[in-house]
Amino acid sequence: MKINPLEILLWTFRRNENDVVNIYNTLSPAMQLATGGNMLNFGLWDESDMSAAKAQNRLCDVIAHLAELDSGKSLLDVGSGLSSPAIRWAESYPDIEIWCVNINYLQLQAAKNYLRKKKSSPAICEINATSTMLPFSKKSMERIVALESAQHFRPFENFISESSRVLKKDGILTFAIPVAKKNLNLINLGILTLTWASEHYSKNFVIRMTSKKFDIVEKMEVGQDVYDPLVDYYVKNRRNIQKMLLKQYPSYVENILYKSLLKMKKASREKLIDYLLVKCVKSD
Image (tube, rainbow, N blue to C red; front, side, top):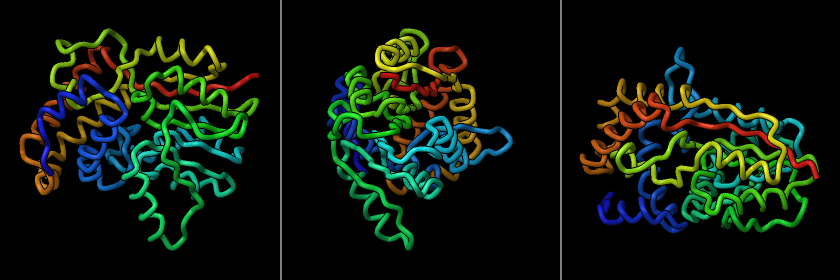
C-alpha cells in the first residue's frame, strides 16, 4: 500500500469528511492486521487479559450495556466502521433493528460482503450518509451509538442536534470518544499528530455541547484502561505485528505507528488525553 506523505499532512490539518474517509481506507487495514479482526476501536483493556480482540469486544459490550440495548427496539450506529460492533450487538440482542450510518462507502460495501458470507446473517441496514445530517425522521429511533467515531464529526454540535431530533422521548444516546484534557498542539503531541488525525475535542467541550440537548446520566473517563494497555500490547507483540504490517505497508509506516503509540502512552500519563464514555437521555 502506497502512502503519499503530502496526503498525510493534508489529513492532519484539513480533516474534512473526504480526509476522514481516506484516513480510514489507508490505515484501517493496519489495525485489522494488528488485532486480527474487523473492529476499529482502541478497546477497553483488562490487564489480566492482554488480547486486542477481547479488549475491543469488551468496549462494545460496555457500550451496549450503557445504551440499554437489551430493552431497545431500534438502534442507529453512527460512524459504524466495518459494522463489526453492529454485528456483535445484533447477535447479542436479536430483537433490535440496527441501522449503520457511515460516510465511507467502501467500508459499507466490505461490511455487506462480509454479512453475505455469514451462514446466519443478522438484519442490519447499511446507509451511506453523514453524521451531521442523519437521513431519518423525527423521533424514529430509541437508541443512538457512536463508538469511537464522534471525534471526527464536525461540527460536533450538529451531530448532537441531529441525534436529539431523531431520538424518541427518553431515547438514549451513548458514545465513546477520545478527548483532550489540555490544549493540544504540535509541540505536546509530536508525532502523534500524524496518526491521531481527529478534531481533538476537549472533555469540557463534549459535555457542554451534549448537555444542550440531553440529560447526561453517566460519564466515565477510562483512558487508563485504553491507552496504556493498548501500547503495552503492541510493544509486547511488535515483532509479529511488524511481520504482518510489512506485507502491506512500507517499513516507515510501522515505525511511525510505533513511535506514535509510545507518544500516546506518554500523553495519557501526562493527562493530555483521555477516553470518555457518555450515556445521555433525551428528556423532551
